[in-house]
Amino acid sequence: MKIDQFQSELASKGIDLSEQQLSQFNRYYELLVEWNEKMNLTAITDQEEVYMKHFYDSLTAAMYTDLTKPLRICDVGAGAGFPSIPLKIAFPHLQVTIIDSLNKRITFLNHLAAELKLDNVQFVHGRAEEMGQKAEHRGQYDLVTARAVARMSVLSELCLPFAKTGGTFVAMKAASAADEMEAAAKAIQTLGGKAEEVFSFRLPIENSERTIIVIRKEKETPKKYPRKAGTPNKMPIE
Image (cartoon, rainbow, N blue to C red; front, top):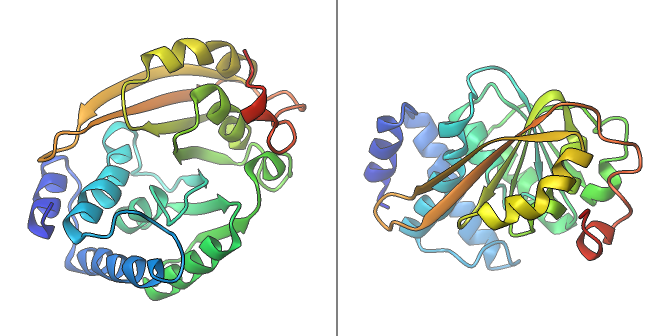
């Protein structure tokens, strides 16, 4: 995806980027490639692929949720900043917290935020299972995002504790998630969530499949969740 295609595809979805925002995406790309030589941030480094599979893909979350208000967002396991940093660039009024278990990624994100002059961003080094039990994060966010490969039953336990009652958890998946949603139904309900909508679509140009799952937090997550680090993955709620 060339930069002009990136801009026009987003514009066609109602996301208009200024020259300054395009410049921020360009600098993001440069820093991603530069730091990737020192640490493993992404397997994708070709510019057109980064714009498609990282930047554009991250921004699809804004096509299925309303990000026009000054929401508090928590991005769980964001790695090199996806989807929350592209969302923050496109919607500067968002307040973003990223939680990641790898300290060197947090170092990269702090440098990135300084270079891009992003305000109202916070980077927290820690595991989601531990941070989800801390009062300063538990039940504090309007929107929780995860762009992850974990099954929905696992992902729900890692993410739903961060969402306020009445807030939303948005899971971004690569392929169809119908089977996963069936298997995760009990976990989502147990954790206080209710599946609201599942959107399936294809990325422009290259046509790869994507799914966005929107879960509404209807009631508080029981105190015992999330369980201790590693447990959700080993013993998903079923």
